[in-house]
Length: 194
Image (cartoon, rainbow, N blue to C red):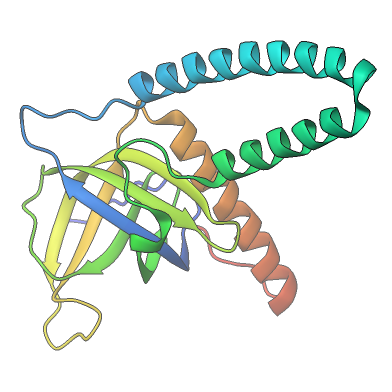
């Protein structure tokens, strides 16, 4: 008789999340590094614009404080709206399917309708509740097992987050730890690690 060895490096929780994923073709590759580089360039451009805007508003302030204040408020409003607007080609937060999933810092398992073969590459977007933080990463299908007569989905899909997605892994680890601490505190019972 052989003994099955499980290798778990992170705590796991069952949690309701928003989830959307797309299958990547062999020729396609989603690179978090590339999108982060674009975000840094965009942040630099916005910083330059804000600096120039502040200089102009300070000049206007000397002549007409009311107009300068209105411009400042308008600039703040645009910044707040831009921070909440989904960028890039990722699906908007409201297009994510809300479901119960098993979440850890190295992967996620959830019910799905269609079978996906092991080794399939995915681009995944997870919305963590209740903060609505949208976490993007690439993952590989580890297993997709049938779950007949299950209203949540026909298959139990297990995916592993790619190792080069450190920021996504860290966000999920922080979420799991926060939820685990909160659940343990509310229930008064230590939670099992996995």
